[in-house]
Image (cartoon, rainbow, N blue to C red; front, side, top):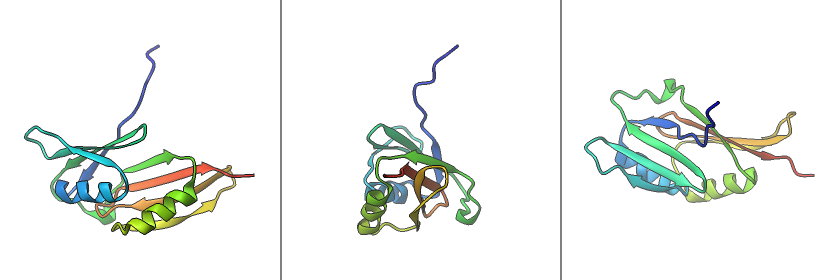
Length: 120
């Protein structure tokens, strides 16, 4: 059986330049694709998200979501709040399944949920 090594979700965005700025504000190192297509790669640690400009984005109807397993949900929430990024933020809460989870919805409607193990 083939072993899967990593995954890079492709997030649709309405304006690649704006999306590059947004994900940089969130602490990602973002590199624009050097080809003709409006595309970019957003990296943070071992996580890579791809950003692809598409026509006619409806942020209220986006169904793309990504779950990020991290080491400290509260620290990430504080970091993103201090960065002043646009979009919608949901503060972390404890879950019955042992994670502390929060979320961010970017201006194109892409959902970034994140969670860290409960402490203690």
